[in-house]
Length: 70
View 1 (cartoon, rainbow, N blue to C red):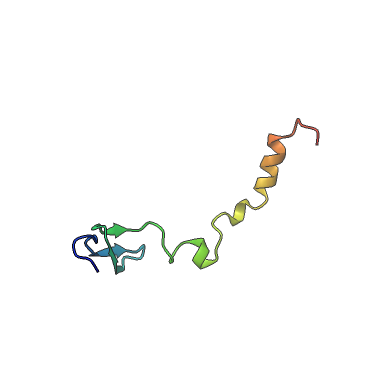
View 2: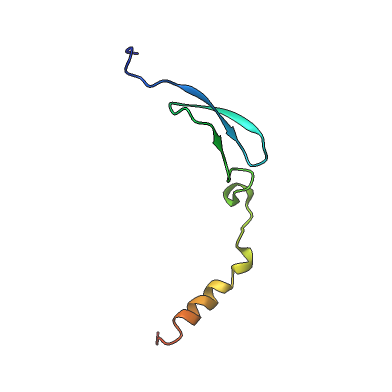
């Protein structure tokens, strides 16, 4: 590697939603606190947060476009 052309590399702490801390490495020196991570995001948990709204989308559409003839 050439000297002097690469950015500095820092160890950063990332605090997850359950309070645990992991260490990542980045060229940006900044610790992070996550509000969404693999512990509570539906992509990893498989749970839908809007499961109760399943039929409400169709009702909202019908209400919004009630005066139109399709």
